[in-house]
Image 1 (cartoon, rainbow, N blue to C red):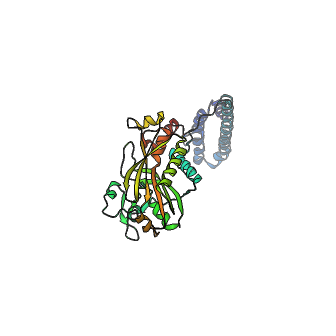
Image 2 (tube, protein in one colour):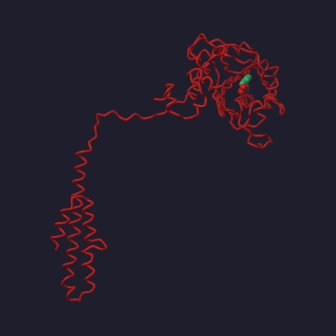
Length: 341
Ligand code: PHE
């Protein structure tokens, strides 16, 4: 009987067959288990004779199963080692690695270009109060240009009772810088800005870079030279032409909107059927009221400021045509414009 069991275990061709034999012998309903149960009903003499025999059977079967299992597993491992070869000469699967985003790239370029002109990088909070975002910039409460900004309000006020909002431009950094450091000042302030607006050229979150110079004897000529030097360096072309159009911002006087244009195929595609000029920034001489609101004497200090859409700069430089794609996080889009590895 022991021999029968051992032969069957030895004959199990794989782990599943071996498991079936184990259940048949040692499982709850197994034959060996049933034999063990018969011991309970025997007389002491019978038990003395049968007990060792049945226990020996159980032990032999248990050992045979373990041995067979080890043999089958070893054979399986040998088989896998023989068949599952790894071809070390195959090229590795390409990894999708991200890279610097165009917006971050442009911000770095701006910091570098302006550093050469002696500008430091300043920052301010994205969650602002209406005094820094509007009032100090000569946009009083009932001013129509507040409505033009499509502001996201938080519906609550800060510790000083000022309505809190997401900054609609980087201009509040002008205020914070003039309040926190003495002139002369030469800063740029790149960062996120927010307006409730969304189409192919507007996203609710976008990026601006602010520029601010406060010193003695600053004129419109300094502003024009700075913008020209900046845009030529940024577009890496000497044929960049600027057009300054008289405009209005409450915080600058006079104010000018600046268009750039040049003959460049990629640009033509982006600019489309228009007259070949693309508006890139707003600028002007800092309004005396703004200088005074920051505690400086406008008789002594003058300056210029400008505000420029970073996303728009990136679109122009890299020939992208839909602003919304900037914030989709689609690596195929980055690749298309040469940004991902
Ligand atoms: N803050 C203005 C805007 O968002 C741009 C600007 C900045 C204009 C500085 C003049 C001076 O449109």
